[in-house]
Length: 197
Image (cartoon, rainbow, N blue to C red):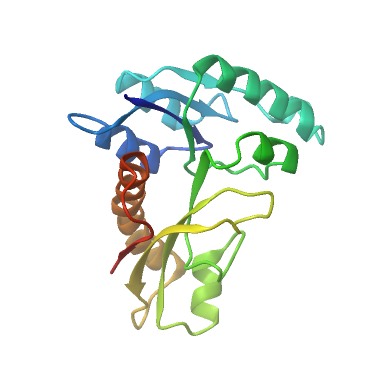
């Protein structure tokens, strides 16, 4: 049975593209929806070009009404009937009500070796801490930010002269390998976590 995957984005959607491109051939899942919180997110057009249905719910008119925003998100997700939701650069903090509704069916990729550096500016924080290595993590989404059980990690060395941008670029290469690998393993019931690098 093919599993249906919805992907939530906020920007260009490079991880979304890698996920969609991976779901071909004998892969046990297919993308059923790509949705953004910004109607101008570049990833929407890219998803359409890949033949994936798209939707958006602009978060800005809702102001601080996160419940109202998430209610609209859930309506569109419910219509798509996903088995799994992948957050791929979705830059909105989700309420416990939303994460509980999709508990066990929502995963996220985060650019740090969790539990280190939850939240933003992870590459700069790793450099400022003098870390010898950095990387990315895929985890189940819970009510606590960047805190769910780990499903995979990929590591990269921090090199002399690295900037936040150069480190981010190397981590992104690993994100593009790790996220599809974790998605496939999860859909196939294979052993997790996956560790790369």
